Image 1 (cartoon, rainbow, N blue to C red):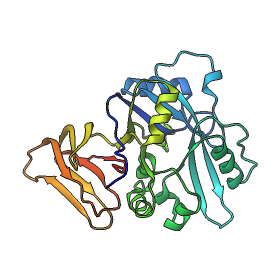
Image 2 (cartoon, helix red, strand yellow):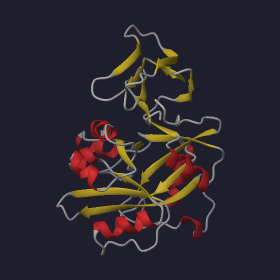
Image 3 (cartoon, one colour):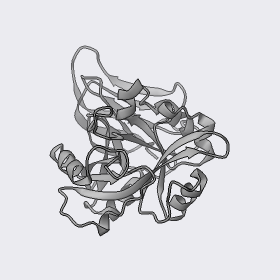
Length: 290
């Protein structure tokens, strides 16, 4: 593999969520209430992604216990007849519910947004749907959709995309925090950045210098002499996944846990990503290593 290694882990790891709803759309908690909840669970930042309501957190008064960042969730049917929910990370002007999906998406792209295909399994998006709009990322785990009908995984469509082009994978809550959508703190990302600022967090996400998780932790991800080494929280299994059936693994079923693993990187793989699994079956995933 001749591409640049993705992971630069010399910064700090910051816990955050990229899909959150407040009372500005259909969430059950205010931004202040959510900040208190999530800060209490160890979060450092949140993206506010209300439906067709682009946030403007810099203009708000208030001293939050974590860093809020701007975003929006778009929804609708495109010209091809496919239904989408699309999370856009960034600050946007001009997004509104009376515009078409394509118009709003173009606004987000033109203003430097990170465009993410939300919960494709739950929405029923096909691989072709995903290719049509050239997303920067896809939700590989959505906590609320898992609760609603078990359709919270986007791993299959993620790997299908990766066979053609690089795309980032996000684990998210999609938190609404109300009786019919009670889940939160079930899926998140850990970003490695030099500091906890909006610019640093956004730049690290754009570079893919983060991993997604439902619990297990990657403490470091390093490359040397064609092999990648990870140090982790105690896990039962560590795996390297490549295209189709290609893969490698370490770990055992006898209860013994590991905190380090090393994998040789095959030169003939078009991509490689890592995942770890703890004793409770919870998993974490890197982006593609290159």
